[in-house]
Length: 386
Image (tube, rainbow, N blue to C red):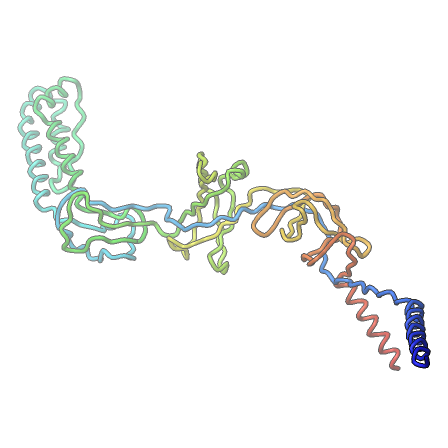
């Protein structure tokens, strides 16, 4: 009996303890967690609308504006000219670049000149008797003729009778055959068509040159062209004569060129238009890689910002009363890193750098506000220490 009573008391004590502990637990109210509001410090910019120029970047390699590929039209041995025919050699306009052995052909020309001289001499007695008014001009022609120089033009006939007489003696036929030979004789000497430099040499002195063989390449230095492909959507904005800024690959040197030609045909595959920019500078070389910035269009009342600031392609975060607010804008032109937009009022404060996790209504501080608060707190702390 005693054990039973003790057991019942133990159960009552345990039950009472459990109930008491439950009452104590339920009577305590858990403290509400305090949410720490994080205020991000941001970089801002104040809007000032202005005229924004749309710059179209393009690049390419320089090519000489004037270029000549040298070909031989006759056959013979390359004779020394006193100047080595080597890459990089400069020539002045009219200076001999290549001389081909022509002694055999020159003898043929001299023979033809002598034949014409004999034909004219043979008709002189007939001219004295039948055409006395024409005799003196033909006599002067013979007296002034230098057999080692180009054959001068024949005297003009006084009347049709003289013309028929001269024609019947094959004078004109012989004369034009000689002019044909003299023209070919001139092809044994190749002269520089303009001041420039030899960029490619395929023969050397003593080489047997054959007709149709390519001998080299000659370009004019100082004036170059840059061919770039521009999107067809800007075709209406490109103008001949417009100035263009050019930069080298390291952006260390800036040159100024101008649009000289615009192709009238759009490339069907790329939908681009070939635009040629002319640039003059003695420091430039053919083949240099340059980047051109073409001023295609001017947009009024607009600004240019980084593309990373755009939200949903047509919105932008602005700052109002210490919070982020989304503003709807009108994008006008996209480039690789920038975008030209319209629709913001002057004085609007926008974020200058993208804010991770930004959302509308987010509480923020500008860098200027944070600096002022920090300075104020520092002043307060110093006063308390005193």
